[in-house]
Length: 324
Image 1 (tube, rainbow, N blue to C red):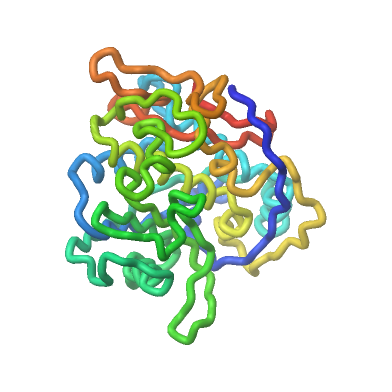
Image 2: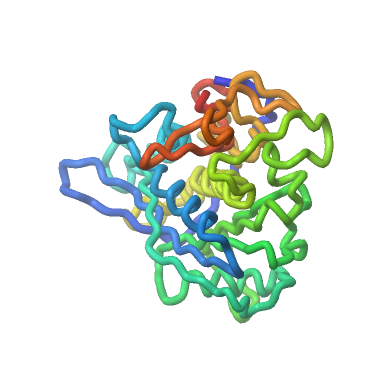
């Protein structure tokens, strides 16, 4: 485990439309399902697409035959945010159950727009149109919009202290906001690589430290996984999205009087550039290097694949949790 200092932020509770939630039987603990609809905007390499799909599939991969540490162990820290007092209270009042569900992640749709219908220079307005495209006619999904190297996303706020973004609402045709969580990630290899592709690219500020080879052999693929992991962890732990995992009706809004300060907002962003135990500015912390490929990694996924994933704030230890 690695510790890092972080100021705890007050969590604001919002209300979202429900996502997907399934019950196996009345006597079993249900599992929340985070259904993702991927939109590949622009041209991506086969390795980029494969790495993203493999990473998502690895989030719930708990098979004993896999190598440790696992990507799924990291996701279990994300899932631990379901244990906060407010969530368990919601669950108790709405479903008469005392055990919070796990979050299963699956891809329900994958759509490619290589012709880039809304152009290469994105703004907030056409960025939200991409979100609507990713949703199509489906309900209860979280769109994940991935922007290729040809796309410039400065108009969406990228490179301004963020390498990915998530939001909880979008604007409809009248300009009125409506609940709709989504994640958007640009290509870190070309979009601010010194900020977003470290440690596979030299840092643009602070101590440069060492740079490493990506485990897949492609910077654009593995840096994309790091930023996608950050976005998914931040949105999945947001209280508004957490509440939406519960299908019991009617919608319940907590007043925040019993908020648990150990459960901070954006837990992956809080631990930016921490990849292993002993991390400090310019140093990733403890990670491994594959002796064959030379790729740096800190976790394993499906099919013994290796990934370098970001740290995430662990409310139990009050520190940045790392696989190594």
